[in-house]
Length: 131
Length: 60
Image (tube, rainbow over all chains, first blue to last red; front, top):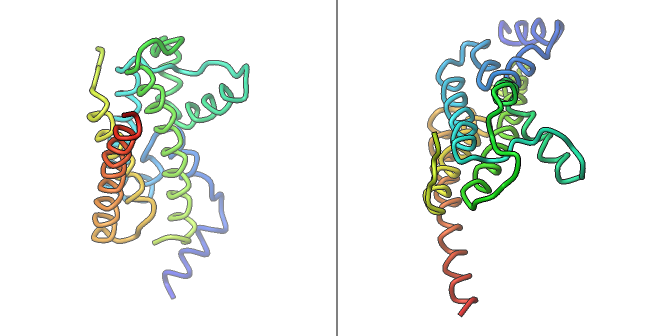
């Protein structure tokens, strides 16, 4: 009874706080709901993947001139603040020149996509769709 | 800082990070998360090894 009441209260207000927080900083949506270990693991996994991608000199998409660039750009944007900081600091390569840089590009894009999944999971936890 | 892993190291790192996120987001209890994450890691790494050997024999 108490659980269903709290779920109703949670779903009646602004529901997208954890989703937005989780997008901006990986794991923040889970931290907001006191899921400390899950949030920390998500931050470590997604942040680690992004940082390793940058360290491999992976390409950071900065514009969308073709459909493939557009998809890569959308994937990169999923990393939230990591992407914005990297753009500001001028990190990442402009083009892929080595095999390792190609792995790095994939790491960066996939980190962004995984963060979107994690943010949606935080939203589902908040609305009670997932325990 | 420049990091230049081998292809296999990159596969293992990719499998590790991806499995952690999949486990947390696709399962509800810690025990099921651990089992699902381990299964995902094994499938990622195992399929990479199997496909590598297949390509090795196809290229000969």
